[in-house]
Structure formats: C-alpha cells, structure tokens
Image (cartoon, rainbow, N blue to C red):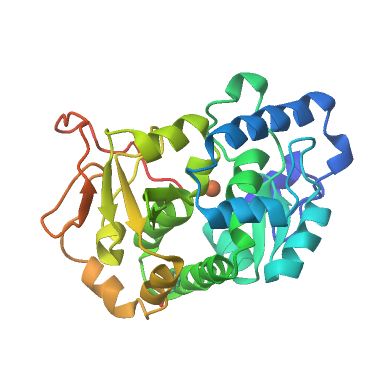
Length: 294
Ligand code: PHE
Ligand code: FE
C-alpha cells in the first residue's frame, strides 16, 4: 500500500498531492478558543522579540485572535502579496510532496488544532504552528522567494544528491529556529520559536543557548534536537545575506559535506562567530538528538 492509500482510510477525500479540504465550518467553538488563547499569548511576548517582517506579516494578512483562519481567504490575501497560497494536509507529508508544494508556492499546513492540554507543547505541527508560525514570513517577498528556492533545492537534492539531511538542517536552523541580527541584539523569525511562548522568551533572553553567526556549511553539518529547546541558534545578518548564500549552486558544497565532521547541537567550533556562548552545562553524550525530523 502506498502512503497515499494508507492516508485515504482516514482522509477519504485526500488528493494525489496530499491536500485535503480544510472544512473551516467544522471547527468547534472550543477549537477557535484554543487558537485565540495561543494568539493572545503570543501577542504578549512577540513585540520587541519577533522581527519586524514577521509582525508586518501578521498585520498584512489580517491574522486575528478571534477565529482559526479560513485558508481560502488567507490565501487570497497572501497571494496578493507574494503569490503564495496555503493548502491543508493531514500532517507531515513525504519529502518529495513537501518540496513540490513549496516549489509551486503552496504552503502545506495542518488543519487540526492542538488540544487545550497541549497549549505549550505538541509533537506534530498543528494549524497554529503552521499558520501563525510560518505564514506571516511568506508575506515578505524575499523570504517568500527563499522558501520556493528551498523547495526547488529539495527536489534537486532528492533527485541528484544524497544530501537531504544537510538540507533539512538548513531548514531547521533558518525557517524553523532562525534568529536575525537587530540593532539591540537579535530578533526571532523562525516559526518554531514564534509559535511557542516559552521558546520565544528563551531564544531571545536566556543565557543558556549558544547564539552563533550563521554560516551555511557549519549549519548543514549540525544535528538538531526535536524534543527540547535548541542549544544553539544561528543568527543571520539579513534576509538578503541568507538569500545570497543559499542561491549559490550547492553541488560543490554537498560533495564537501559528504566528508568532514558532523556537529552536535550544543557544539561550538573554532571558526564560529560566537555572539553568546551558552551557559548550559554540557554532559558528554547527553546532547545527541533522538532523531532528526522534517
Ligand atoms: N541553491 C540550492 C541548490 O543549488 C537550492 C537552495 C536555495 C536551497 C535556497 C535552499 C535555499 O541546490
Ligand atoms: Fe514548521
């Protein structure tokens, strides 16, 4: 049985590209209330911590606490900004499907919302993480281009190179957990941080994690943890700079990455541009991630 056929048992109307209807009218009041609680909580912590591009995206897309957004309406606003649309999918989709959507400027988002007892932590990305966390940055033209280029790069990495792990690390340390230089230090743009109250505070203020200047090869050599706050954040100087580095042809870089070291999440290496050295006590062996996710 293919993955699609297996999913069809739970989602009879799943399409060949793994999209499903959002069924916006099916959300209960309780589910809308969970969105509202999460939204209001983030509105208290994000001003001054999230980058201005993220906060501008919230405003441009009319994202509001009252209801879980209707993907069609949200997509119409987003498409007018940058040509992207948001489509509903069951949860994590296979890599090739994910890359194909990004390459076509479609962002696959979970439609379900976490239970009230999961406000602080969920394992699978829900509509709050996917929409509140990811979609505002897609209203920023340069970031919108970066995400599409990432999708095309993923298609290429799948077809030509065995480099998916390296590329996934780039996604993790930028799209999901990226920080950007700001006059007063650093601001958040990563979706995994902006959709979490505790990690928003931790990423910006805690003395515990390392904050290291972004370097493409370094990041692509660094494992990540999916089960706890990050031990290292990589700080970009600007979105222009991130784009300039990632738009280069990765063929030579992938060949180089096939050899040489892999770093653990908490490591600091000599060449690093260290902004803050984390105070977390390092226990050998304790920093290995259980596994690396999508
Ligand atoms: N430049 C990469 C390649 O040649 C593609 C890419 C672009 C990857 C932007 C990530 C982000 O494969
Ligand atoms: Fe995500």
